[in-house]
Length: 502
Image (cartoon, rainbow, N blue to C red):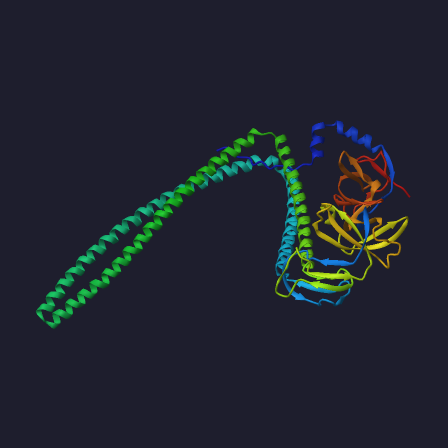
């Protein structure tokens, strides 16, 4: 029998394959790159909060009445204050049942834990794929022998399965025969029992007590023997069915083993058909797939983190607090009744005299949160303000979402009806990994940076996020421990030798 070879697929980077295809010409190019030495400055990424602000046109309005509409509907579990009471900003007005929101949070946290576990597993899988590539390169010469062993093993399994099939068939036939014998025995005992019954009836008619007792004993013995025979028959029937099932199973296993043997032979033939180059390209596809799976896992963690944040936000929405200080003029909710999003739950006559109103699109509204700071500009004068309310329904007139801000302090200079400029944060990332904007390069729409490694520049593809006037957020591709090249230079290339500026 011919030996069979197993194909182990190596995992190679695109650069390794390119070097193999291009031949010795790549050595000359590497020498030319190393001849250039670029003087650079390096630094670690900075972890900080980064945000983007936007200017809006706002209108100063009299801040007389504030309608408190919950952002979610639900049963009111707590209600505080009465009409006519004065409340301070931040006072708890009422609570909505948060049972569902708490369950959603637990589910989101469980999803995040699962996503992180999946990411860790994928990191390990990627490392395993890369390790397998190195191992495969060393095992290629032995694969032919391994495939031969696989064929021999499959053949032996098929032979063994055939023997098992024959044994099971023989056992099934034996059990069938035993069952027929047991059935016949039952019939014989039934006849003997019937005869014993006739003898008992005759003895009873004769009236001889000794004959009656002897006949009754014989009849009882026949009844016991019949039960024993029937039990033996039932056991034989069960053994017969079991044997038939075992025979069918053994026959199936035999066919599976035969197919396994044929498959092993085909695998050996397929191996002999393909070249080493096809194996190399297949290995590279596995590596790319591992990288893509890792990227998907990272995205899954990001999505799970967002789900947790949304769930926490939903819980916050169940506690409705006074956005302003003022006097309560109306209350439209009561304990154990439903609070909706159509009717104001509380109406507060605000202590403040002015507010700044502006309108934003739905996408922007997601990132404007009550409590955010804002800067109001009127005729060159800047006034600090804070976002007080963000409507969750579209304004019928503008088709946008209404946002209200309140000046910090007395808001001197703001006149009701006047137009002002108001600037506030529309995007923000906490604890972002940032680097200077001029450290980021672009190849079309793809961003990349250069990292200093062992005295050489390494081109690193990155995914960017928010940016301000100085720094840019890097969401993927760079960690806080990387040494990023801060100096912009047109001479920087992947693999160029570096000289660190003093």
